[in-house]
Length: 186
Image (cartoon, rainbow, N blue to C red; front, side, top):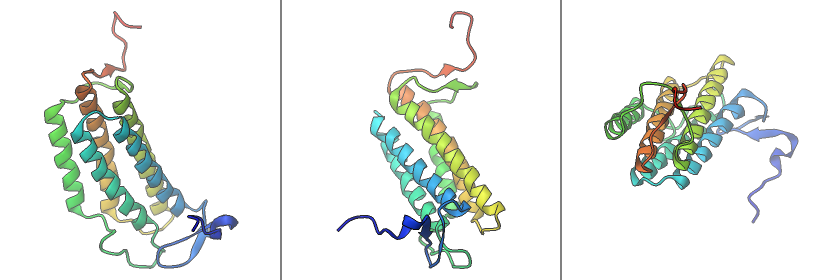
C-alpha cells in the first residue's frame, strides 16, 4: 500500500480533529518547520561521534514529533494530553543544557560552525529550530491558540542544540572557532 493518499493534491492538508486547510496556512508552515527541525537533528545525530549526543538528539526528536502533532490540531479542538508540551519538558531541556555545559563549557564568544561534521549539522539543526520557533509565533499571531510551554520548549531546544554542538566538537577532539578573526587567522 502506498504511503500517499492523494488528498493533498489540491494543496490542502488534513488537521488533527478534522478539517482541511491550505498547505500555505501558518499552521502547516509551523508544523512543517518542526518536521524540518526533526530531520536536521537526525542528520546531526547520524554524523555525531558521541553516544550522549545520540541520546539527547533522540529525546529532542521525540518531543518535536509530539509538538508537530500538537500544532496540527484543528483550532477549537482540545490538544490530546499525550501531545501537549508541559513545563517538565522544558525542565528536562534545562537539565541537558547544564549537563552539556559541565562537559564542554560554552565559549564566551560567537563561533563559526564547522569544526566537526556532527557539530556543524547540530548547528544547522539549531537554526532550523529557531525558524520553527518563529513560525510557531507567527501561528500564534494569526490568532491560533499556541501552548506557551511549546514556545518555551522551542526556545530552550535551540540552546540545547548549541550546547550539544559544542559538546560534539569536544567529543571529536576539536575546538570551537571564534567568529571574530584573531591576528594570526584569516
